Length: 385
Image 1 (cartoon, one colour):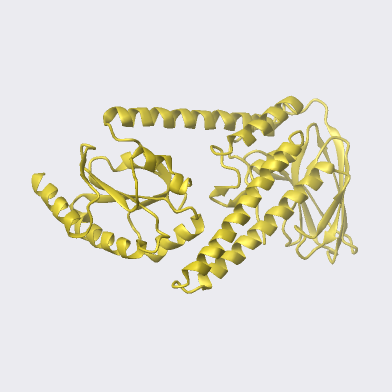
Image 2: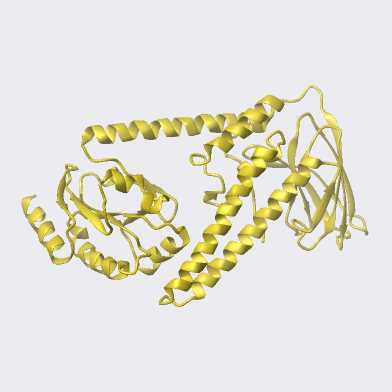
């Protein structure tokens, strides 16, 4: 399985160094005779090919380059995936391995930091493989085997949490290594960092503080410090937005991610009639409840009614699967705190399902209505417009 580490996308042009140091990168790759090899420098926001060569008949190659501070590089041999490593001043780095699956089947000598990169990639590859396997197993289980599905979903959560804890512990143990920067920006997929910039802010601060002390002039240090500023501004803007929302009405603000990872705010629907629904999609009774809600939604959606559903499911995999399975097309978000949700507590939700009807003025005009009673109330409100 191939994977990539995407560094935070902040463009930075490094100043020309006054005193750079020679680095030698040599390789011996089995079954790679007469293959094209590229040395690629990984900068913040962009990569650049700095040299290329061809292996000899034994799969050997050598590059020489210059660095002032620890710098990330890729070596690409033929059609194989890249080998990522860190080159520091005056190092003599040797890469060995087999061409097929080189990004996993390699070893590196002469650079301890690069061994940490290999460890990080090895761990993440195992995690992604396990996640893919569990997801395929989950899909293959019949929908009426709820207990078995829940068991697989729980295993999926365990794998995810194990990876998150591994990344956090790695950063604590290796904070002074540039590899901690690499760990910080690894991803489960294109849309999901292993360590969330908000929830795992402490890890970001550890890396920023360590790199600032060790390598204050590094482009990676400057990038993460800038990223921290952006995170702080984002947090502050969110707080201000919530204050404004609460100032406009007495209704508590809600802002949570949907199944695609996009954060959706309840206030985004201001100006419409809103059914604010609290539910657990994984509950036994939820399918019937959802189908009834869907009938109401289909009847009133073209009359200015929207649904904002807050799901309190503990398991993200099971929840996202059910969103698709039930064909939910309204705004459906999930609180990672599950049944311990502070949002639900703020809205005084005692049991689920529970709902509120909110008018365009952002006022509550109905509570805990279902089926025919919900339709009657909505019809009354439509007549009052």
